[in-house]
Image 1: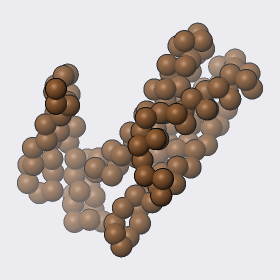
Image 2 (image 1 turned 45 degrees about the vertical axis):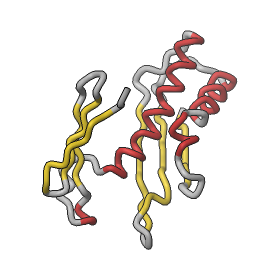
Image 3 (image 1 turned 135 degrees about the vertical axis):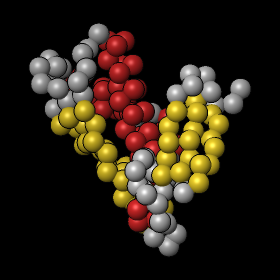
Length: 135
């Protein structure tokens, strides 16, 4: 079964539909690449997917162990290179909620789990993944 369908709308905008759920994501080319920058760019989605995937894997581990990480915030910074234009780095910063009650052992387990997400393994090794956990 196909995952998604993408339609070009013109003006460097696409509309992607997740076929199973019907969820829609629109993308724009960024301003620094002749676009409007009014939506996520495709490279923004790659960077964002890394943080979302890491947090999801942490959520699975937390749920399995009955730990609470609700309210965790992840900030993403995409770093672009040139010649060729590409992502050269992704900064991922986790701000964990106060009062989580997790000790050093639990924190280490969650941090290690984050690094095992499928997106982290799928990103080319030349793309730096700079990950910080603020407990």
